[in-house]
Length: 209
Image 1 (cartoon, rainbow, N blue to C red):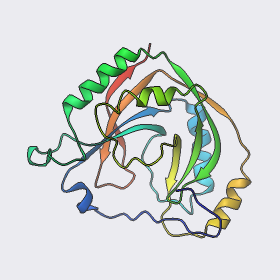
Image 2 (cartoon, one colour):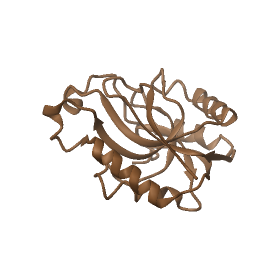
Image 3 (tube, helix red, strand yellow):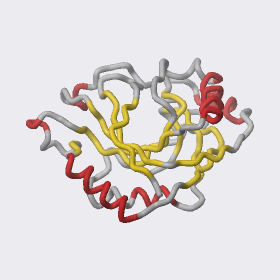
Image 4 (cartoon, rainbow, N blue to C red):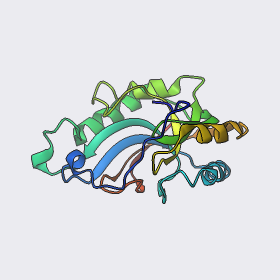
């Protein structure tokens, strides 16, 4: 999962991946938008330091993924597939969020780290608020491709197979600059499944108390 010394990165290929999307367009998720210009600029600066390794352009705004829902608004004949997310499931998740009555909260961004497939910045959740939120999603839908949830802000996918050691050495040289980011709403949105690193489109904002 994490990039290890003496290994290599995974390459993200700009392919169609038709075996995955099967002709469907909108892949949906719940996420937290980072709506802080200074923090966004900080993340952009780090991204630029590793630009030679990363797939570009990366059109997605900075965000923290909360829960990966699956394909949304698929044609009727594909809605039986296990990775389809139904409108009713979204409504049920919203109902559970309303019952939770979460207020606005803060998260901290930590150090730069790396998965084998992507460079990212750690998210520090001292109050375990993300776990509380994710518990509103589990009873309704099975999370797609869930392994171990590691909250983070993705800086970019690797565009090729690169030796890990130079990347890890460069990461170690970046000073930790903690950021505290306040969140006032959750976002349900989607991205185009056939476009690598395409823009996120927001469909619904759940405002916190």
